[in-house]
Image (tube, rainbow, N blue to C red; front, side, top):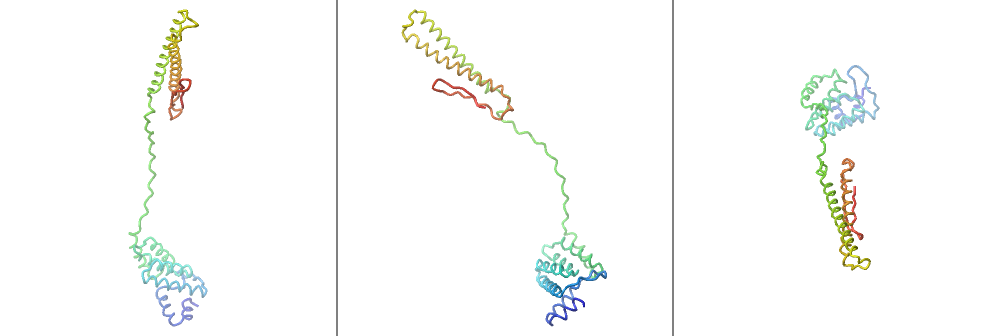
Length: 263
């Protein structure tokens, strides 16, 4: 027995009046339009498909298109009635803003399943009117060519100038020369005192100044030699070995001065 006929026999008079709308707008009995047999539904499925259609129609009439689309889709999944695809396309088209791409998709599905529908010309005109509002798919731009990576700006301390090393070497040299002069001077003083013949009972005042100069001279010789050595090593270290330059240092100690470098 035809699905709609069975529904009319099962429903009350009030229900029949609503199902008459279904007969006028959509046939819940699915058909391919090409003489193929429809989908066989159980009475429960028939009733559920009809209820979903009625719910979708109510939402459609109050312009609640999202709810109408959801109900029509669920009804179609049960009944596979082609007219529901047309209703879904209509709901997508009437949304604000219209969802043209989705509407076109469901209109095309409807015409594919129902190629001989009486409303084919109307659907095709509607589809034609929707084509301008479908956003074209923008072509994927080609990848931009890789830009050459510019070398990092040279640091101010990465140039080829060796003036810091020269300062260290020069300072060390001057200190060493001064120390040598003082040591030589003190040795001359020692010799002069020794030549007086007062040794070993000479007056300490005669050689204390020479002794002081001797100690200072030795200290300057040590400091100057160490500073000069640090400067030379600093000069010879490859510049690419480290981004950090060596640091030379001189510090006083209990026995005089200490000199060194950190790399």
